[in-house]
Amino acid sequence: MDELAIEVGVDPLEIREKNWIKHEEFPFTSVAGPEYDSGNYEAATAKAKAAFGYDELRTEQKQRRESKDRIQLGIGISTFTEMCGLAPSRVLGSLNYGAGGWEHASVRMLATGKVEVVTGTSAHGRGHETAFSQIVADRLGVAFEDVEVLHGDTRVAHRGLDTYGSRSLVVGGEALVKAADKVIEKAKPIAAHLLEASVDDIEFSAGRFSVRGTDRGAGDGRDRDGDLRGPQPAGRDRNRASTARRRTTRSTSTIRTARTCVPWRSTPRPAAC
Image 1 (cartoon, rainbow, N blue to C red):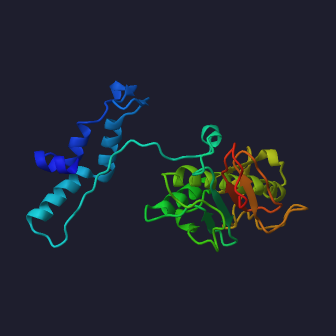
Image 2: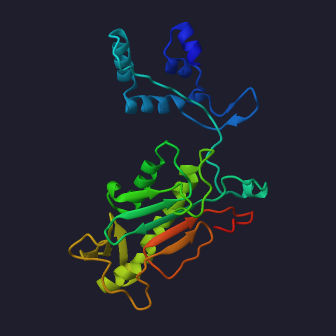
Image 3: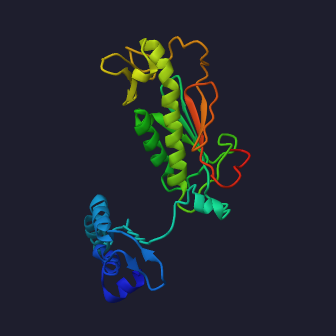
């Protein structure tokens, strides 16, 4: 596509846009047979161009070339339609498809208020650490900078399927969501104990537990008015750890760390999971 764009003197993105399946053409059956059920590539492209300032970048690129700037600006474009993000499903499980079917994640809230994340999928320079940090920070109501993502070392991440096939965010990210939710659920009884309220009345939002309909609340250890590091309910382990699975769940008796494994439904789970 780039070579054709150079040959005819058209912007590489423009020549791609000329060949989009237009949104009003969906559902669209390709010459190879498969049917595309829906899509709006024009809107997605326009949004991406605005987000990156594409036109401004092209202008800057031209200026650098014309002025023979020592530091040039390269702009790469890749557009494709692909089946990706293979995740747990009955269909792939029934086919004994061996890849992508589960992933492991661990979320631990440290006594310092920082959050340690361990993921079984590993980043290869594509920004996974940023995405995973954003997911956990948003779910737990903590600062993005307070989340540390650990990966790619079997001494730290004991379980996982690494990264391939566009599955890291779809499966690995979902495992982190489940782990973070498990952290919140296991901390609710502690918050209820400290706030002298029923667990059913405890709400969680923006990093704080509160009693529904009141202004009473407790935080994760960084708030002056409430701290989950206080006295624990009887029978609770102060180690603060838990494990969880998608669809089948098991938990230890500890509280603030959650590990999540996302396995196949129809195939044997890996022993490490």
